[in-house]
Length: 68
View (cartoon, rainbow, N blue to C red):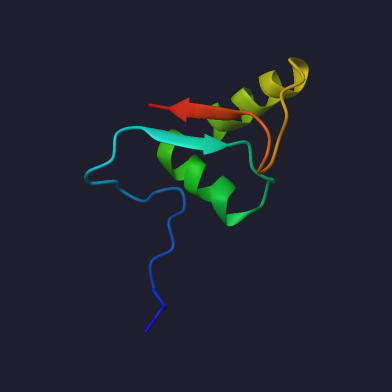
């Protein structure tokens, strides 16, 4: 108990979720891969570049984003 075989990464097909509210996560983290699965890697990297330009705060206590 307490384990799952589910790992969400790019290519995963979401069935009942159409919006993701999340922080800006570390690249190469499982949370970054989850966000990439939801929106696509290229678009997410573009958003991260813009966030850096605008001096957004990253990680757990930083800014968040809504991905549709």
